[in-house]
Length: 385
Image 1 (cartoon, rainbow, N blue to C red):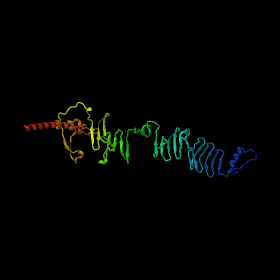
Image 2 (cartoon, helix red, strand yellow):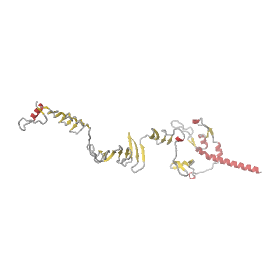
Image 3 (cartoon, helix red, strand yellow):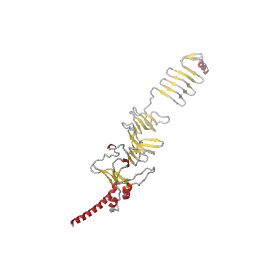
Image 4 (tube, rainbow, N blue to C red):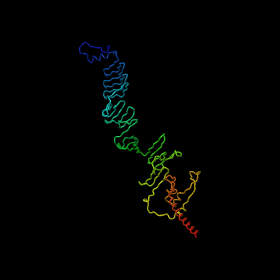
């Protein structure tokens, strides 16, 4: 068996007469002194070891390197036909140019204007179709749709001029939720849930405000009683459900206004020292005015009681009326119907506006005053006789 080392020259004594057959015979009988094995039949190098790297298999037919290890990196498979490297591990840096939004430094095959580029030191940016879509600056702040990140804010969002602009959008099971400005040039703001659900806001891990799926506004509660429901725990000044403390200036100020079909029908007015609950009463709103002529008789028919509320039976008794009885005398002072219930059989209680009784009481008092004045005149005449 022939022995040779790297750099060995050989000849059979005839110029240019090293044939393939002779070379095959030589190689077949050779004992290499370096780590090299060559099989002429398959063209395979089974092992190549040079201290710093190993080629386990190199096949000239498929162009495949099964393993290449060179201390700093590993290539599990390299196929010359497809140019594929399934695994690449390197302990040294892989560097590239900075690139631009139009020509990113790192791109996928066949799409040269979409990828990653590096617009500044410690900054990474992503482009789509040649335009910047997102960047992460040197402070770790993220900008989406903008390269001008708001200072001190983790995420900056800017839209492209569409209806839902500058927004954070969550889309799950086709239920669109977003927080957005209405348009790029508008100062309006939207928080939207297109699903049949609620929107709620909380602090200290507790719910504080909710807009339910029916559009009811709830503060301090998740149960709607009406369009606007406020509930405060406990009692006293510190937990007053509704407080208005921003009215300033001289004279009367409106704390609240009530409208029906766009026309104001009442409100709450305040001054520096008092509050008035006002209902509309302008003469221009009224017609068919008639004096009350039987005030005393109607007042005599109006039952008045002193009673306890069932919910506060141990409390002090109060003066008042029973709604359905008062309705027989003064219909406009009572709301609701006697013994009404809702679809679940729960009571719908009647209510009373006792201020609506005042006109009748005033008429009765005027009639009584007239009688008193008549009697006084008769007494005076008798005394003078």
